[in-house]
Image (cartoon, rainbow, N blue to C red; front, side):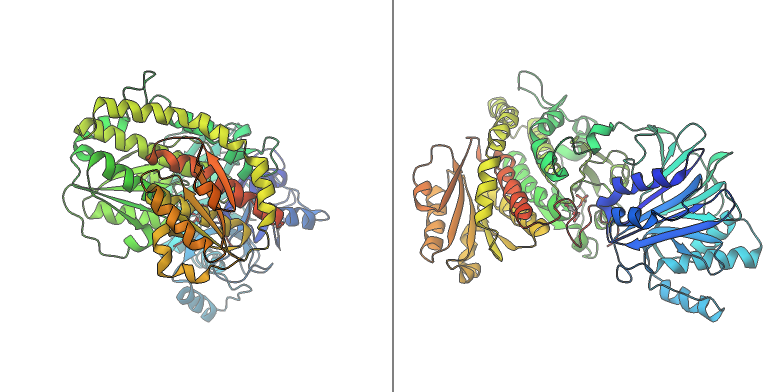
Length: 614
Ligand code: G6P
C-alpha cells in the first residue's frame, strides 16, 4: 500500500522519482505527489488526485528542479483521495515535507495535543500528524532532523515507512521503517529509496533492506548511516538484487496481467529448477533438508495467508493431507492473528505471500512464533519482510508480479506446495518411489500443457464478449478444483467489478441455486474424473433452471460437453495437478471480460497489490 520513492545525488530528481512512482503504482494509485528542494533552496511540494500520469500533467508548468526529492503514490486509508490528503505533507512552517506508508494508530491523540500547541492541519490524514510532530520536536529541542524524527517516532503507535526532507538541509533524506517496507539503493555518489527494489534496478543492484526500528540518514556527501530510534548504530549488509528490467516491463503485452498469465509455463519451470532431478525420481527442497526434523515430524500444519495466496493454501491442504497424511488447517491471516489459536509442540505454520509484506500475514507469523511454532514461508519477493521473518522457506521464483490481480504467483505457490508435500512425503515414507516418479513426471509436463491452454486465448476472448452483460457469476468446483473456483471468482470481481461467488459444486443447492436463472452464467471446473457423475448432476441442476453453463472439461469429454452451453477442453493430467491448468483459462476469461468492459485491468479500483495495513 502506498509507494515511496526518494533520490539524492547528481541527477535531476524529478524524472527519477516519477519513473519510480510508475514502477510502484501497483501499490496504490488514487493520488500522487513529489517534493524536491531546488538549487536555490526552495522546498516544493506538488500533488494531485489521480494516477502518476495525472501528476505528470500537473507538473508540466511547475519548477521541478532539484537533485534531492521524495515522491509518493497513495492508497487512501484516512481521508478521501483528493489533493489535500495526497502526500507529501508540509509541516506548518513549510520547512519539512514528508511521505508515509502505513497507519499511525494514535494520530487523533497526537493531533489534539499538537492543535492545543497551535499547529494547524489542512488534511484529514494520519500522516500530517507525523510531519507536524517532527517539526514540533525540531523547534522545541533545537536539534537535528534525525533527532527530531527519533523523538517523534517514540510517540507513535502504528506502522510506517517514511521519508522526510528539510529545506534547511538540502543534502539529506531521513527515512524510517516499522512494519512497512523500505529499501535503499546504492549508486555512485547517488542514493535511491523505495518501497521495494523495482524502481532501483535500472540504476543499481546494490541495496540495503531496512529492518523494523531502523532510521536511515541518506546524505549526498556522507552516504548512508543507519541508527535505531534510540540512536544505536546499525550495520546492515549490502544485498544484490537479481531483477532485470525486462521482468518489470510489459514486453509488448497490452497489460502486465496478460504478460504474467503467459509467463506461467516458464515460471513453473523456474520454480522446479534445481528441485526436481532430470530423471524425475527425486525432489529436494533445501528447507526440508535443513529442517527435516521439524517438517517431517510435524504434528499439524497451519497455513496462513490472504487473498489469492489463501486460495493456494487451500490446495496446499489437500496436497499435504493426500501425500503426507498430516492434518492441515488453513486460516485467513487476518483472523488467525486475533484468534488466540491453540499452538502446540510440533505445529508448523506455513505462511504464503506473493509480496512478502502483507501486514496480516506478518502479524500471524509473529503470533505463531511467539507461541513456539516453527514457521515456513512460501514467498515470491526475495528479501521481503516475510522471507526474513520465517524460520525457513522456499521462494516461488516467478519474478516480479506487477498486475494487481495475482496470476503467476498463484501457480508458483501451488507448484511449491506440490513440491513441498512430495518432498515431505518422500522423507516420511508416505509415498512410494513409483508414485513419486509418476507425480514428478506429471508435474514436469504441466508447463507444456499450460502452453496448450494459452492457445485458447483468442477463443476465450470471443467467449468473454457474450458475458459482459452479466452482473453476477457463479463458479463451481469440487475437491482440488473448489479453490480454483474461488480463485476464478476472485479474479473476475477484482478486475471486472462483476459480483462473483465461488462455491463447492454440491453446496450450491444450499443457497446459491436460488440465484440461478437464464441470466446467470455458471462456470464449472469439471475435470474431476472420480466425481464425474456428481459434477454432471450439479450441472444438470443448473441447466434445469436455465443457467448458462461454461464448463472446463477433460480433453475428449463427451458427456458434460453435450449438456453445457460452452465446453472448453483442458489437457489430461492427474486430479491434484488440475488447479495449475484449470486456473489459467479462468484468469484469461476474467481478463477478457474486464478488457471488454473497458476496465483498468492492471490497476483495478480500490485495490492494491501489497497490503501493508491491516
Ligand atoms: C492483495 C492482492 C492480492 C493478494 C493479497 C495477498 O489483496 O491484491 O492479489 O493475493 O493481497 O497478498 P500476498 O502478497 O500476501 O500474497
